Image (cartoon, rainbow, N blue to C red; front, side, top):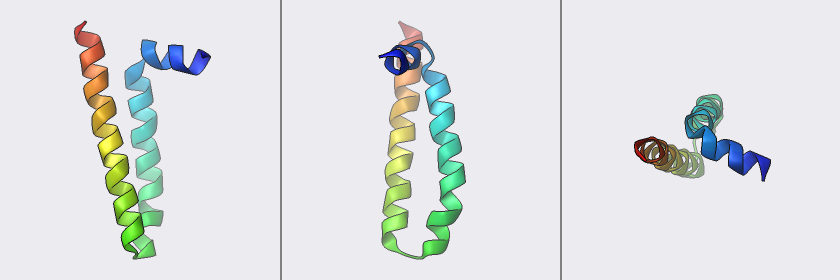
Length: 61
């Protein structure tokens, strides 16, 4: 529960970690040449977008 409570207090830190993970994983996905890598990266993009909206929404309350 420590991770969840920390994520609720600092949602932008979670967003930063996910974005950095995407930057690190992107070269491996891009060089594989398969459609699976592209789909996985698109799913990661959707997760980043969801976390960004959640982060902004939490700061407006």
